[in-house]
Length: 210
Image (spheres, rainbow, N blue to C red):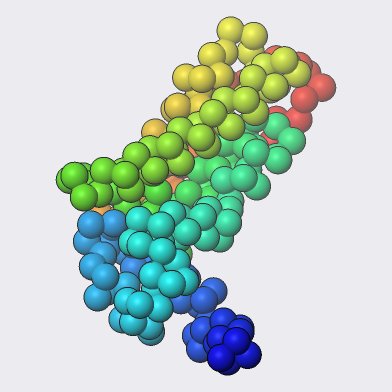
């Protein structure tokens, strides 16, 4: 009995967990947390509820794992943008990345991090709070990067990095909402470019303008 039990524990799940999580992410992305039923999720993942619970936990835990996958995949442009050499290039990479991620062919329109649980009721409250924290975390990272830009003379000394970071997030979130409503890639690139025309100029003449 001991040997048979150990063999059972080591038995493979019989499905590709990575592929199943990718499919769950797309369901949440397209339908939101509350709109995605367990039937929708398990059907897309190609598994039953027992297997889903065993591999990923409950729906809320699955959602968090899907959001992590989204952050490392479709939304990875955000972290990449922070590594750009100038503040304006950070802003350009972030806003253009937002357009690309929310309008890319073959994927749901909009942003999982924005529309995933905006209007959630009590059952989706934790998912809504998770997404709010997700957005706030990146706003803080943007603010930190823009504070450095002020210190380096890449932004005028009177610039408020917190307000500027919030401005970028507001434009990005608006891009996501417009994309979900059917706005095209070309339409939203024009919006991003208009926002960038308002960008504060660098004060250090040695800084590239990007």
